[in-house]
Length: 485
Image 1 (spheres, rainbow, N blue to C red):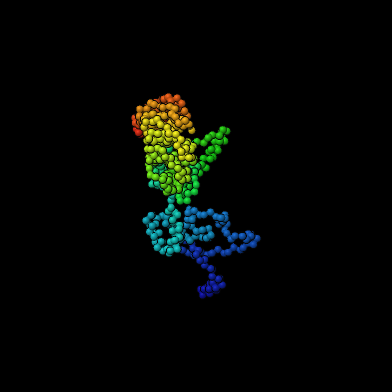
Image 2 (tube, rainbow, N blue to C red):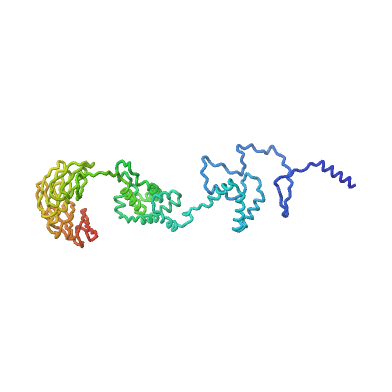
């Protein structure tokens, strides 16, 4: 009976074909690996088959990027997880278990594990590992650090070109580098003093300065002194764009247009000082040309629209055209010429020979010789084409009529040499070695006011009709009100 059953069993097994074994499909039961029987294939239903897709992509696949696709960032290059891509059906359970075990290890065990894995990698795999790990190790310090520490880092930078290039790295870098505190640090490093509001706001606009405005004409030998500040100009333009919406909002709220006030920032101050310094160092085209025909100390120099006039201590006056070509020499003084003033083609000069001479620079002839001073003529000014005023070491000022060649007034009152003078309208102010400045009326020769306050000789004076400025050997500059002294 047993043999019969055994024969039947063997015949039955012979009729049943062996089941195929699914390679790679394993099931875990109580820690042992067993082969799982595959499920029978489904009978395809032709009525429910969708039409063929134009692109053989799975529904879960990401959409293709637009053309041209943006460059991937370091975060996009490195996968967020080591799980298999959606194109793979099933992940190997061993890899999943390995990840879970790795996550539970301490730092030392992780390092040992990774070291053992790296020893198993070839050059291609190590290159891939470096490509994946490098972006993760990079970190922007300006994003991680507060502004105070960022400014501390910028203290070690003293090159403005580096500042300009740093502003192009990212928005965060532009924000830090564009902060006025950073430019304050740079101003202190270059020892740029604070500019007055008049010099920044009225006579100079840093954003509008160009090399062509400072130095007209071609300059083949020198590079542009503003090349290093192109990035700084980009910062200024960016700041202007950021303030435009606010300006438009203010304009829409008020009907009357308001004049925009210039902000005197450390950045504008540094840009002004740096560009002026660069223009002095590298700007222009230097011509190695000695235009004076003889040796002598230059005691006075004037530039006009037609002439370059040079006075020397050897009693000669040289006249050049605007190109530097010598035109003529005015000879007549017997001692050094210490003061002169041009007016169109007329030149008035004075010197150690105590004479005041009137010249025609177009012809080179001497028109008048004006005598009266008893010591060196130290300063000269002209109030109009026919009136000149001279100051001398004999403590007096003299008003000369150039038409007749006579002295119309003698202004006496100083107790020492008259060193400087300035004219505005019918008033003349004089500074003397007696530490005082005086205001005179040119038509009457009357002393209207005496300005006292300096403790030493006055060497320089300026007058614009509203204010008088005097500079003295006592190292001070005083501003006076001509109305009340």
